[in-house]
Image (tube, rainbow, N blue to C red; front, top):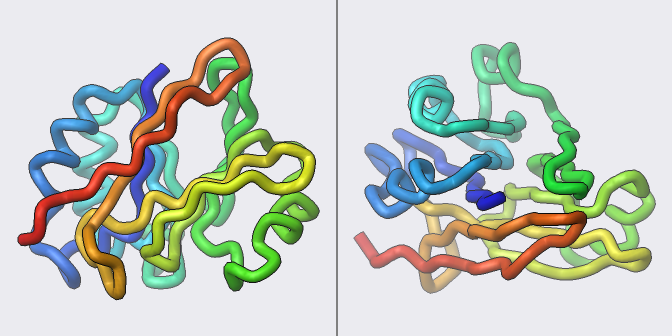
Length: 166
């Protein structure tokens, strides 16, 4: 199973549209995971229309229309792994231990908010993944997203993709 991880798209505030490279990845993915801060309903509609399967949550910049359609936390099982999706996890200091305590029932937690890519493992084995943002690099050198595979209860290679500067 091929997964595309994305967060903090902020369309149309940070970009007019999603990058073409990201949209091509949507077509290749079995599952698209969006960790919040969509900002507009049109991006949700777009991904719902072209993704084979979409799991998303709302973020702090998402208004009532998005909050009505998306949960704050999503939990799903794929390929023998328990995934969670949430927008915010708090400060980077202590993140692993905090998330392990909050989500003891998960194998992988996908999150966003900071726009800073993150890949770490918490005590007990919880994998924490933040794909960054494909449209707003903030203090990062590149806009980013992640892909990974999952099969037979194991997470395959996690790849951080850097998008060319606009």
